Length: 630
Image (cartoon, rainbow, N blue to C red; front, side):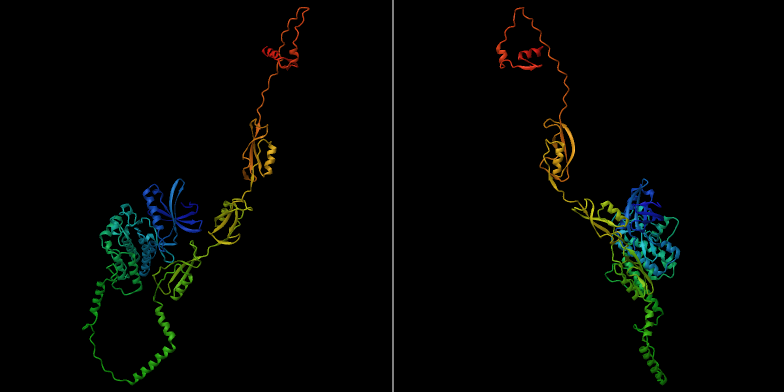
């Protein structure tokens, strides 16, 4: 996967971790120019529909919650690479260590540090439990600690909605057995109190440097959680206070009903310990019967104190007889002088006394306030008024926050700090600005390409008629050319849809020649289009017999008009006419006989037999008939 690019934007740089279902890579988001973490489902599980469903459930569960103590989910996807499906989740990259690594390096954490971490873990689970999402795999390996001591809970890999069916053995074995609750080890239904048990094991590990139960056989460890009495942290680390022991015991009771009902109660008790307040019974509205220091423990402490105290009568100490002192003049004068000195110190040395008193106040605890969404000046004022050190980091905000607005803080509201401690905030900084290029007369694709180079986006607002700009090109833009705009912002444009076309009337072209048709069309602002021929004798050869648009129709000026002209059929060549055969010569009459006289009627009257000119001579119809018959 190293060097692979997902979704055409995430470049995998190197592998940084591995979990039960997937590997984690450090990657570069090219589009937003930031480092992210990408969790990729292991290839051996790609064909397993059950694992794929769990992988998708992880992304949905984690993406549905947002909190400073939970690793943010940026993107989810699937991509086919070299014929293989790759399922991945893009997450916030945490620059820090896992809590497990931190414990290995430091051995044992201080009680206050461990309690501060515990509060942050509880705050993360508080938001998840409010959405009925159970983590099911709380362990030090799934808790990240940033360089500024912010805790980030990650890997909701086997989280399930609390209302679903009983957890299966497959789901159970996927968590770490060293942090299992007894009900989890039995494969029974789990709820928020199972996460509380696992969180108690994490507290034990922070305070002692190790988990309470360990064995080479994971089944043995699971049975220990079910059967063995869990040791107190103070048994391995005497510096752990009895109050912390009691919080731990209440978190890790075998029966879920004996544990804290919710993580909010844990947060309340831990803050009470950090503030050093006196513990007492909770009010009648509290549903939990157990408190940090139960009444029995307080009574036992009181009885132990009474054994060494003087005996009281009727609840009062017996008064010792007072000895009458004699008056001493020297002592009287000394007392007057001392009183004058004290008065002088109060009048002229008030500032010195005040500084001495303030020196004690400087050691007092400070409760952190919620600064997210406020201006950075509020953080500066809070730090100055409480003698805290403030570190400020800047980050570009995707939500368009006003520069200087606090996006996150290293110490959660309600956490306890000592005067002189340091906390940090991340504020929104103004995005880098770029100059807007000139987009006029560009097409949409040309404009998108130009804006992509400066990391801006194109938005087409509307289209307008224009006689100056061709259709499909940009008329104007906002912001204007060379104006500065933060990266990732939109440039709005108005596109041209051309001008209204002028209309004209189609002339009648039927019966005219091609050249005449061209001239008539030109007079109307039209063009002659395609000219085809077709046999037709209804008009003369070369004359129009059809036109594309009927005469009188309106079309756009400049439109082409196709026509069809007539082509007469070609005449077949006739063979030459043979001269008619001569009629046979009549026998001349005998000598002396003359031809019968011709009737004058045949000579002069044309109304009888019409004469025809045949081969240059007249012939009667009868002659013609005889010739044709011959």
